[in-house]
Amino acid sequence: MAALTRIAEPLEYHRSFLKENCRPDGRELSEFRTTTLNIGAISTADGSALVKVGNTTVMCGIKVELTNPLVEAPGKGFIVPNVDLPPLCSSRFRPGPPGEQAQAASQFIADVIESSEVIQTEDLCIERGKLCWVLYCDMMCVDYDGNVLDACIIALLAALKNTKLPEVTINKDTGAPEVNLEKRKGLNIRKHPVGASFCVFDDSILIVDPTAEEEGLSTSHLTVVTDEKERLCVVHKPGGTPLSAEKLQECIGRATARQREIQKLVDKVIHSVKTAQ
Image 1 (tube, helix red, strand yellow):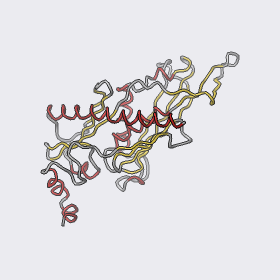
Image 2 (tube, helix red, strand yellow):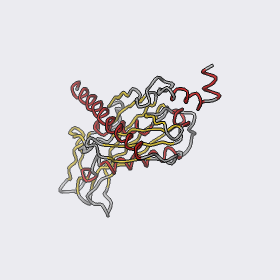
Image 3 (cartoon, helix red, strand yellow):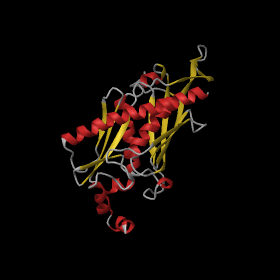
Image 4 (cartoon, one colour):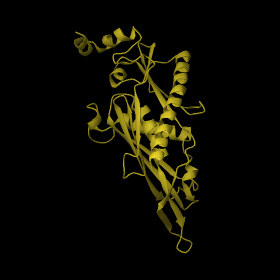
């Protein structure tokens, strides 16, 4: 009977759980799904990470290349993020050019990188006006079950912390760059942004870390990104019903707690990998 109700009246099915302050998967309203992390999973990348938030799975691979700085920004390098939501991760996505959700997710990640200052692009400059690094940060969703933005941020942060740049020197005689692949150093990670996403049901009931089904039934979405200093980096609300100041403050408070949880997880995994090497 419950299975039929879930198919025929999915919103009413969810409401029956929300009235009891729980959700169909057994979580409390403010409870995140289990989050796991693996780094260095792509041997051909300069840095990589695989993140699972519940069933939602995102892999991030980072490739570094040498390029010329822009004339208007001679002392800066580049960070180019891209989020891919292929058909293999969910039947809701179709083959072809990136859809609206993938494009919006890529722009969101770009905003997080810029506003959080996770890496300052000045750190990617090798020789002012002549040579710099560009970081291509590709995030691909392998399995989509909601809340892909949080998973992308975690995967990006972990992959950046896993990335090592080769040593580059400029030949004084020829002016050509010489790359030493045997000598590498890690990126200067200045901040640790982490996102927490929320959905609102019936304009009043707030839940965290929504599944794909919950996202589709909710009346509003919100993602809050904070760093380790509890600084608010990004508040992303793509339409929907407005949130009260009280609800927004509740989201920010939960996001700062989530930031601490995820940073501990990332640091623990990074430490275990370094210990094993």
